[in-house]
Image 1 (cartoon, rainbow, N blue to C red):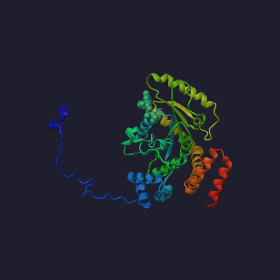
Image 2: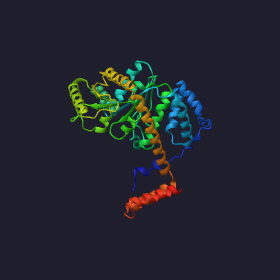
Image 3: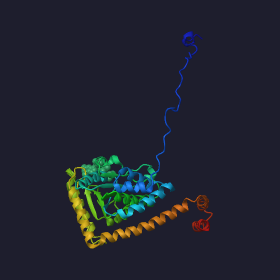
Image 4: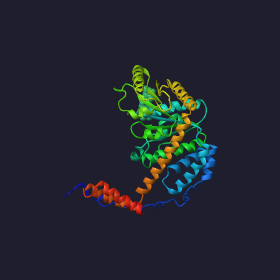
Length: 361
Ligand code: GDP
């Protein structure tokens, strides 16, 4: 059949002679030299000088899983310890959307106006799953991120909550040695991470929102009990009356709580992180708290208790890692788990067998 495409001008494809392709690898490029690992004493010296690059590198080693990095990190921490402790450690928690990053940005600038330096760290247990930290992200704290006296570091992402929290605890030591006299530790107010944060800070601030129905809902009683201060955020515009109502509700709820170990009566304030209303008042409350606990000796006592807590936490975490990272145990565990799931062995005898194998090693 005669078809227009059978016309000679369509038949056959012309093959043009090609051009020489450049090599895939640029021959002029020098192989990239790996940055030499800084020694522990170089890092310590840099940190004590307040060198942020050295501080960041040391924090990266604290967060690293490599045994070589860990060894350097531990030496750095040990040497920084005598230079640490001289700061206000403040934990900040609240459900997502409560305004943590907006508030930290505003509080942070307020604090820095009075001089000194501020480090913002985070504990975000979900970051392990999302492979990206939601907390402490620099872009969330626009003004602090570019402030020369602020150091904003996202949550360490690898490992269990205990592991993530320990790394943040160690990072506090490094930041303090680098001269940061204000440390904020942020966490999402939805799970166990508050307990971890509470165990490393002097003051625990709970951010709340008004106008979400039952104000006390969604926040666990345990978290409220830990709070040294509750602040109702977004008290601006039409929301002011609702914020005041929530403030009254929280105040009366707190009255039902047992007295705190510090003897401090937790306060409830309203403010607006976004419009920067009431920021100074919140900061004044924190000032009063520090004056109070330094006066009655609770400040020192709590820090010592925390040091003890972290000793045991670190032991627990390392034991756990040593156990689960053992390849023979991992294989045995997989086998035992399958047996338990198939109802062929009880949980207890399976656990006993695995533990026996571990201790016999
Ligand atoms: P986070 O998830 O707790 O860190 O909360 P964000 O700081 O990201 O704030 C969540 C949303 O609430 C953002 O859209 C903010 O702009 C808004 N927001 C934060 N603080 C205030 C405030 O004081 N007033 C008002 N009206 N909105 C705020």
